Image (tube, rainbow, N blue to C red; front, side, top):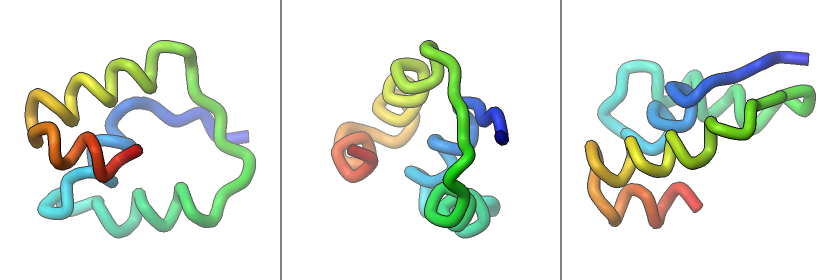
Length: 60
């Protein structure tokens, strides 16, 4: 089991983020990921406010 936080989702949504490719690969290849209940709403808010609605829509 790997506990992940908001940053990984924000990195996947931001194509200019240096860790974008690594985070995207992690989400694609690991099946034992765990998140807390607050991670998804926090990530959605950060993606929309920092990267814009288009980036949030791509993240769904």
